[in-house]
Length: 105
View 1 (cartoon, rainbow, N blue to C red):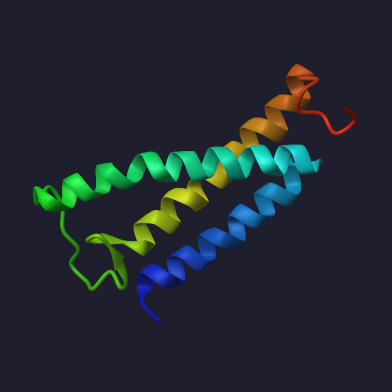
View 2: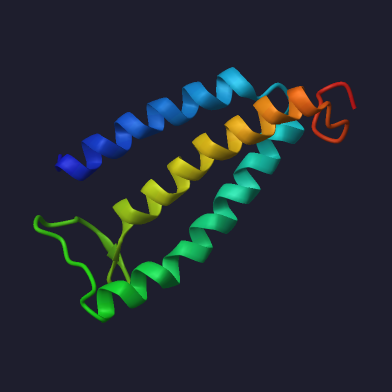
């Protein structure tokens, strides 16, 4: 198990806790997953171009790759998006009283 994998597992635990803490309906969970997948798809070309142009490299073996982009990068993008979107949708949705995001609608 690489250091990247351990970091991503730790981050997955934090993402799950954030989602459980802030989200109160299936509608909110679906929104968080949709936004997180979209953000991950947007960051994929950014990583690809950065790697192809040698803008950054990895001092250790990053593990499995998809078209030269490490899967650890994609999972990191997804997990960070889940955390931030959970806080925004759940926390701000409650504070602002957004009717479309509340669990009673």
